Length: 449
Image 1 (cartoon, one colour):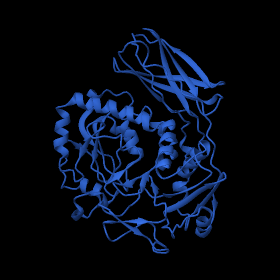
Image 2 (cartoon, rainbow, N blue to C red):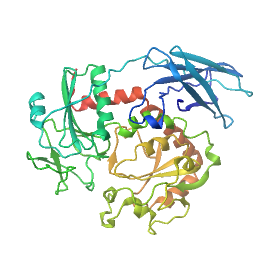
Image 3 (cartoon, helix red, strand yellow):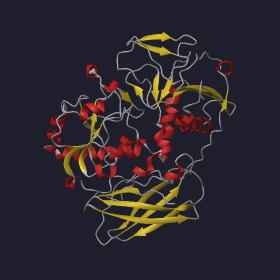
Image 4 (cartoon, rainbow, N blue to C red):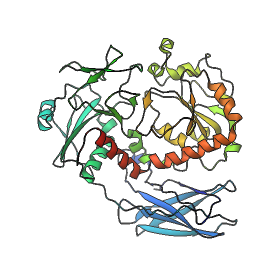
């Protein structure tokens, strides 16, 4: 088994090699649901113009690793890249020395040696009845739709209530992560939360200004999968603490907070995307917009101002209503993501909710993201900004060609967006930042030390 290839940038600066703090994990598709976590930091240090070092440090345990660590080095000054092997290690730190056959340049960024840590693993949950859950956690949860799970920790024991557990393997990685953060950081001796296992909360409803709280009756959502309300101004109150966690949540929906998506955990913390751009220079890419998903995926509810279209948003994009000048796409076939990074502009259209892993690799693709206006937000969207990280597009694609031509005449601005997106990827998907964001979200929904 091998650890995925890791990204490094080298460029002109002042005093030593630029340092990027990157989390690394074992990546093996055959172990998607039971992978071994190996969190490794990589940093570089300038020695002289023809020599530098690469150091790998294991952070999650004070021990070595028995997988091969490979490092992808991208020299920005000459559009060159190379893959180096660090290999295995008996100790928690290993350094190799690199001597390229061309000059390298130092950077003013200091080396930040991240602290070692140990996360307490969440124990398996005990399934209990709704009545027992309410009694144990002194609350008043109603009969929940099938996609919502109530999870509580008390004295280190995890309890769970759900009507059918049909989506258990869709949500258990998220639950284990949240519980692990609570236990490791001793955030509470008794706390519960409700989390949605679907792609988003609320799904199958158009975006609207929801300003009227509606307290749900005891059995109003019995035998339903999702929260559905006929009045577009109402939002559901399912328990006295009010909050619901979701992997994507509707924009401006009260008491709903985003948490890291399940693909983040299933895809080994998105580590396969750490060097996804493959060092392809932006100016060499094809000057077209690419979109890789078929027409039969997505939701008609993603339209914000055009509900009269009454068709899947992606199907509408593939229809004749949207001009295909300067666009490469297929209504019936997937275009592989490793092909899409050869295009300057990559279109991002929501599916059932936010695109999750597609958002991750697009941020680190080395291409400009064209992101459609969305009714969905994720936990990091306060930092994910139009014209900083992506080009905003109307969600009926009416300005798509206009935005394409703007980019074609503003290539330096495009390169800056690519740089910003890569930096955002490294920040939001590092495991240490995921833990910090999880603590922030838990504090927002009421957890107290």
